[in-house]
Image (cartoon, rainbow, N blue to C red; front, top):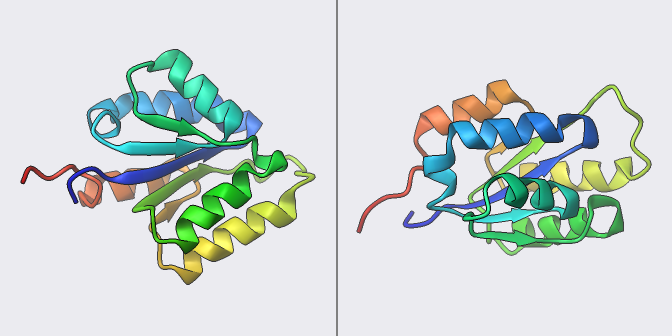
Length: 130
């Protein structure tokens, strides 16, 4: 894959964790086409303004569905979605639909740092030179 296409999503309590984790692998994310829900995307661009990142709507306002559409159209290579399992989510149905689509389309998906690390260490998102 020349430029990996990666969705980045995080619940409110996990946004700082995601932003810091992206910094650890900035060399990969700088070579990727990124898609993020509204606030997550804003936080990432504030910290790393040179990223090629498409900001979608906020998750509860349709951003989760926009990411789901990218999955269904097979326009993503992975999704990193740092989930906060301890906070109630009013749009929990949207989150479940999003994770279901990732499973249906066999999309590599990480919902925590441990799985995200496994995806990064696997090398599947490393940009390959032609």
